[in-house]
Image 1 (cartoon, rainbow, N blue to C red):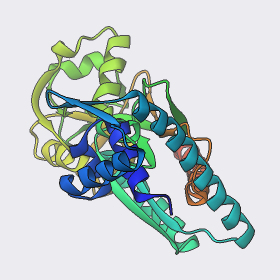
Image 2: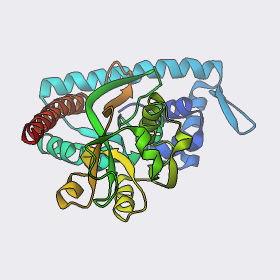
Image 3: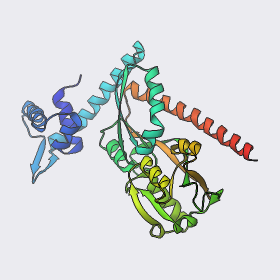
Image 4: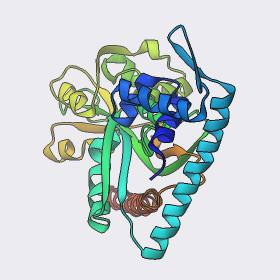
Length: 314
């Protein structure tokens, strides 16, 4: 509904890149340049300084950018007010999730959300934690769900549930009969780990540091980019690893992997990450509230399941 020229300008100004703006808006770069030039002609002044393949806002550009921010907030406030009156919840949302969450947590959550709100279209982008945080920072996605701490204090980070990580080994492995092991016991064996930038890898590194074990002590034999690849490599006897218990439920039932609890227990938060926007589309608010309730409900089920397992073992 907002002036297209202003939307394009705002995206270029936020990213300080015509190329990135074109990718974000799904436009060609010449089309983006044309829209910005039209706005500059309207104001009869330059909005960007272009030097040495870099751009920066002129003083006039800074003024337009600040007012544009307020304009888009007012548009969002207006849309939310109307939809609150009409009861309509529709629109498109873009969610980003790190690999583990995208593969094992979000499909059921988004399926239930879509069943309740069929007029909301949800697009999912998958990357590692670093990639998802960068997408939130650049406003490429509306909401990120990540599996590692987020250091950017300008973003809203809200823990939705806790996830336990365990050591995984083949059934015939020397550690398979252990009920729990310290992290120091894992350095004796070839270790399969996630790629740099992975939230899982970051959490494991911090856990090792707290346990007085240097990451250099791990006998890393291979780095892989997904939980599925890691499970396959461990099943094949290539090494051992640490992964989310939620990712190995099928393998535990089939007996192709054994989970060994770490001592002390290793848990990490799954967190929602989004911009500090005063006004959001109502569909975004509904998704956040739905996800909060979903995670609370399923966290309760997981805790109940663990309690029953403990009772059975006793």
